[in-house]
Length: 274
Image (cartoon, rainbow, N blue to C red; front, side):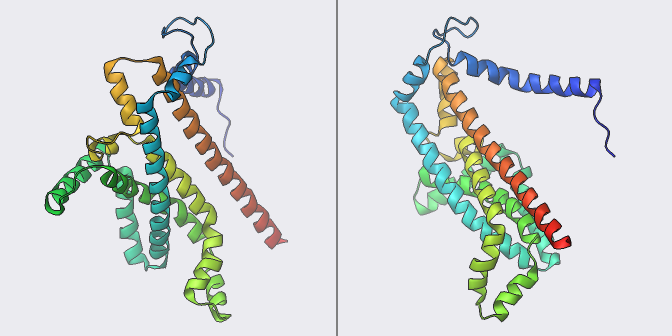
């Protein structure tokens, strides 16, 4: 049986969490400050949020980020689902090395991925006559989102009873119909989780976007970086607060879904054992 952590263990964990989240808490608090001061609280105000939503440059970057994130999430989810099903149906001698290759972008440093994609797009652009912009940024986001989608779906595929597909085919279903009627409903939770993860990663990305966006398009993290190079405005606190809360809500949704799925699996297993 696992032992509960003692006083020192709880204190150490609390200190680490405080060290990690105290700066974010301070940022959130001072995003509601009535003055530009970053050290003295002078009163509650929403003026920085009002200025934020009246800034055309920030709104353009926000819309670009949402469009890129939505398209990248949908496309990478479709491609990742097809790839995961393909990996699942391969023999183990092919599946194992290919899944390891699929995991490389997740373990690779973002700056390496960003520079390599930038060099690739610039080389292809000189031949095919195109420049870095919306298209290259979207392709880059799809590229680093697909492995995470595959990783989210593969465990659900392993939980499927292969006899279900065979039974559907024996009852007259084509393989494609069995795919839509049997496989997709079974792995739907993994698909939704992969979609949410891809959307979150795309919104949060800065390094890869910086190298693949070119000079005519700005995402929200890139806009924040450009603003901090001049001076730290309270609008950045407000914008960072919105981003943090958005990502936090998405992560809560993912974890709640995982807990509910585990409870359903436990209830199903208990019902089968009775």
